[in-house]
Image (cartoon, rainbow, N blue to C red; front, side, top):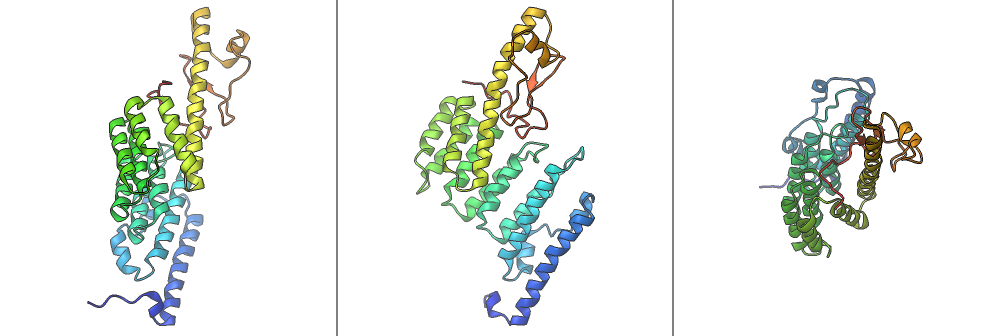
Length: 304
């Protein structure tokens, strides 16, 4: 069977026509985003959802189109996250990432960053760790020597699914890959011994921060470390609330009451600069929904 010619082997007019078609596709998408920014999900399903079908249609421009679909995935994720609507719909994120990685099976950024986008909890993301794991496993099938994908799956099982034994097993798989970082083996042991503790979580994210090969991943690790600091802060604030309850027989209604009772020196703010929020009905404390740290990982991460 004769292999299909590469783009540089085709007549120049054909190549020019194909490049023009791609440019028109991108520009039309940009115009549509500006004019129909509030369009319903049905109108956005004009994307070709099957990466294999699009791969056959793309001839030798599959890598170029993979970039287009990756940009669309970023736009969809970022635009939905920043939207002010009450309901946020990330339904296209998974299909867009699947198309991008089918067109370019070695698209490292789409696998790693896409998995982060998919796992982010609602409303900041779709909260779909299952799709993130499937995406990374797709990457492993294509590039079994990428130990980072095994590690990323371990992080998902640890941070989002609270499946510490499974997380440790994936860290072990990552450590078995030739060229993997030396600390993965000890990370697996730590996860088995103290999985779920805040100290263990801090160690995982610190390792991610120290060894990240992309600034975006490093920034995400820094945000997670800051979330853990916020949980430490909340522990201290809970102590002050409990003392107030012991003194007054009721939860405090505001931070002013705690300051007036000399249980706090001032209004507490989280590491991102937003005031912590206290529920005047029961005295529970959280970060503001406006904070970049919202939502926090939850109560399943005790200090020790």
